[in-house]
Image (cartoon, rainbow, N blue to C red; front, side):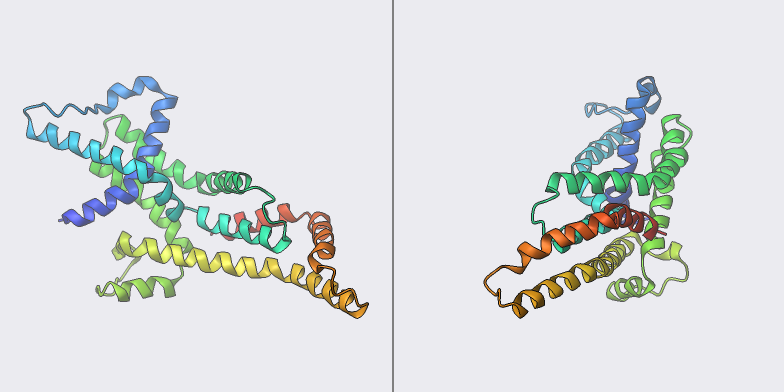
Amino acid sequence: MMSSSSRLIKLFTFGIPFGIALGVGLLVNPRSTSAVGLTLDLGTTSAQQTGTSLQILMLMTVLSLAPAILMMMTAFTRIIIVLSFVRNALGTQQLPPNQVMVGLALFLTFFVMLPTWNQINTNAVQPYMANQITQVEALAKAEEPLREFMFRQTREKDLELFVGLSKMERPKTYHDVPTHVLIPSFVISELKTAFQMGFAIFIPFIVIDMIVSSTLMSIGMMMLPPMMISLPFKLLLFVLVDGWHLVVESLVTSFK
């Protein structure tokens, strides 16, 4: 039997993408709203109807946390960090602007996560809207594709860390790993991968900075900031090798 804490964790983590996919489905097909049979009327005399209404009200409240939670459970974390490394390595300060960086990261996240969202829509959202499965079954089916995606990106070493910190019995299969253990393991794995990619991005630009600094010192121009000279060369190198193409290609193909 699932405990109340496990139900709450599942509602917070997998109710959000399910709710978003459900909202998109309703926008695409407004006539399907009658099939869902949702109501927020708390004045009913039936305890079961009241409980369902409270669950829906809680789910709508949790949806306000959707941006923060979805960033931690999707490809967004790795993508935005790598793009930030690119900007810092170039030394262009606020170019591209933060809005452009976040927008590109969001669209790349949607592109990478599209197969997962399609599975959630096919296995959970559409059957739920057609009244073929219950809300609990829909959440369980929505959980599987997202957990599978996170498991593919998570290192076993990071997973073992949080399994040990939670002081739980060693799981025999991935199915036995709780979600509250999987999510932080996935996040730190994404951070490590993003920093590894950022290190590789920094190397050619550091070489240019070192060459420019050594050249300026050798000719006695120590008062001239090396950044003013190295920045055009770094931009030229980035454009010649089609840097954005390489960065985006590496990011998308880095997800298993």
